[in-house]
Length: 276
Image 1 (tube, helix red, strand yellow):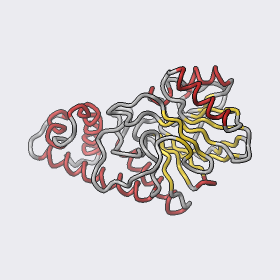
Image 2 (cartoon, rainbow, N blue to C red):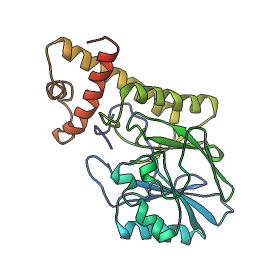
Image 3 (spheres, rainbow, N blue to C red):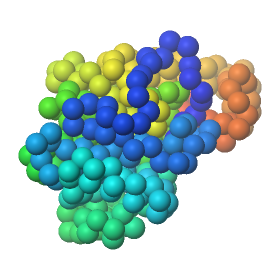
Image 4 (tube, rainbow, N blue to C red):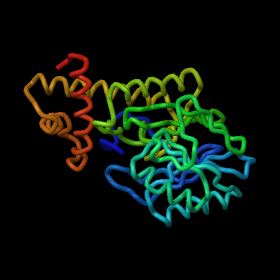
């Protein structure tokens, strides 16, 4: 879920649909909008020599899309064996129960309400299917239940809405919290520095081939926005709506409701740290 259009200086990415890495194929859901960019990226991930695949974020409840995901996997000679969710927003997770019905798979997620089966996902889990290894990285902030999946064999990370392929993401107040989000970005930066991750496979928008650059861009953008919000409050803009109209004046008004969620999260952060 995006808060703004593409911004100057943001790393640019590659494909919107089709193979993105050796192990990941993107199937783009037909739900484009100002909030979802080109649509939700549903990821099919598998080892090259395996007949089993993991699907991450089946997307909206759209039977045509869900069946297309299965068809793409089958055309690659694979059966969907497991479904994972990065978080519970409907554009990522609404179709999960139907997809599980179509594939006979379990659904694993951090939020127990989204799971189908006994196993959830927690920090430090390693998901292994058909020789594939995905490491669960907790990244709360966009939402409390947000996760990323580190794909070490491709030096890639599947980021859901934590990092997008274009624009910046919403800190979805009150569930999302800015302090958590900044910690999550730093955690992802550590993956790029310590684990050699160089590719971002986002939940929306194109693939990014400079993961560290993307994380640094997001951290810098958040610092700039926070300073702008702090300055706006100091200059008498009292409500979140007033701050949005001042700070996001150059952003399409259709995105102001999403921006207001982030502003509310930023105001909470400033109050918690005694800055306003």
